[in-house]
Image 1 (cartoon, rainbow, N blue to C red):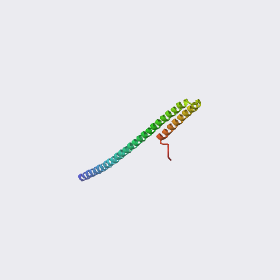
Image 2 (cartoon, one colour):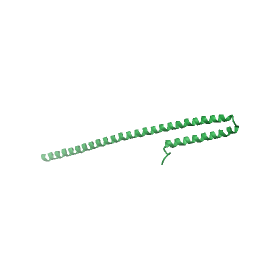
Image 3 (cartoon, one colour):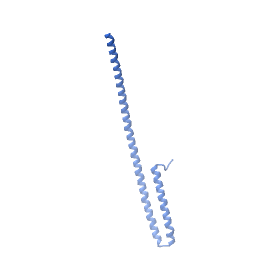
Image 4 (spheres, rainbow, N blue to C red):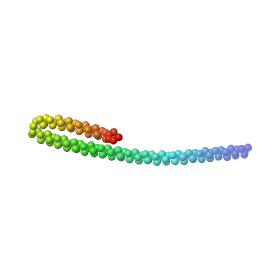
Length: 128
């Protein structure tokens, strides 16, 4: 009978060892998976940061272009105002004709700038 008890004890120890070995393999596999996921997360973060920087740079470039166009528009407005004031001395017909033309041109150019800026920011403009 003592022999049966020893056999059961050995089987129990072997079973416990197999269980511990399997648990150890599972832990090693989980650690390897954790490391792989951590590396993937780091790579995705780096890619995301690079995309964010690229978007910020593009927005900065667009802002600079819009600023340049505004500056050009201001200069055109000044030039037109000078032309109008110069023509004030001439015929009154010129003045009455140029004032609405300047107003319409200003409205059209402003509308175009807004439209171009919107298309550039949303990325839906230009190219196929």
